Length: 264
Ligand SMILES: [Zn+2]
Image 1 (cartoon, rainbow, N blue to C red):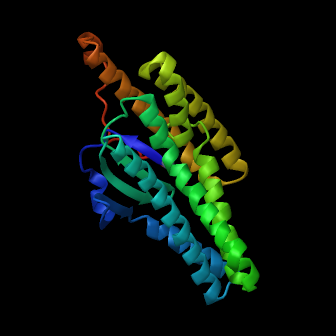
Image 2 (image 1 turned 180 degrees about the vertical axis):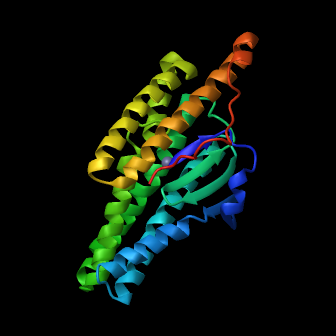
């Protein structure tokens, strides 16, 4: 899941968002299309001959994974708050979550910690679950609980690893930018991170065609959201350095257009 910046206005998509209220003071919502995901999970369980119990277990597992995604986003938001950056909202989509931070971290150190906080939550969840598994669930001899716990641990490790790929604006890409930023400054670091991110987007699309179709959907988000963020950084950079002519020639960044990115 990704962290989006500079999103300050309610969007046209609002009508498709179901608010679940404020959590830790942050407006939190679920996109209506999430129901399609649950419907698809249930359909798959039924069409493969699963009993009602299998359908319920599949839905419960999906909700448990998305609860992990939500906690991942709160990891970003709460560490961002520690560094003085507020969060406009946290949203869950079928492809993942998005924490919309109101600002870019002013230091590479802040950017690094904010980016790492999300995957760290998944590592923590996997670790705690493994602790339960080792101490109790494994010995209890309840097959469905063992399977559920094992799959939950695997899903959280996968979430942490996938998000740490250096595919800007995913978390690993932000870590890459934070490291580059120390020596090169924000704009050159962003330019390099976006190029690396686009290479990953192409890679995701290609392997997605032959394996996980979700990657095919994630690829354009990585490409478009990276481009959009680069436009924002260039615009603010030109403004800050007083290059007004450059600013007037640039497309004004519009955080409301285009898809929102996230991670699965
Ligand atoms: Zn994240």
